[in-house]
Image (cartoon, rainbow, N blue to C red; front, side):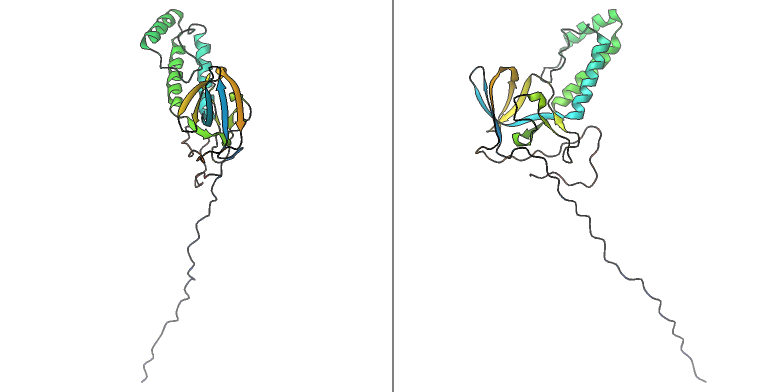
Length: 227
């Protein structure tokens, strides 16, 4: 009697696919209007000359939120706060406890304590903003060819989705060729000249700052690199 050997048919195996290639994300290049050697030359009424390489800006959304707080507080306080709250200056020393007590005393008589709460919120937000300024090279600043700081800005772009603007203070904070920081009272500037090209060491674009509010950066985007 013969013994039959049963061999089951082999099951077809699914093809082995290679792992998917990671997505290649191109680097984000910040916008440049000049180049890394651009600078601004100014002369003050005192005769002091400065060669400016960088200017300090603030997140545009943060500046706008601060302006809303300021307007709300001023509306609630009316004219009560005149002379006690230095509105609109991002370089002022924090209000003394004496001034706060004086204002609270007046407000208690005018039933405007809600305005004081908003004013104190404004002060905290303003103090926080002062610590979050970012210096940008002259060559990256839109409108820098004109001596009107209110028109200077870093436009919204993938690198900086909120954009950056100045805070409206009478002082413009800058860095010179040596990297020394100066606060320039712009009303004291009597001469201004923008040099798109100058013999200077290259500047490095600032890193993408952490955003404090919407919109959020797109996940997976690469950091900005020099243009």
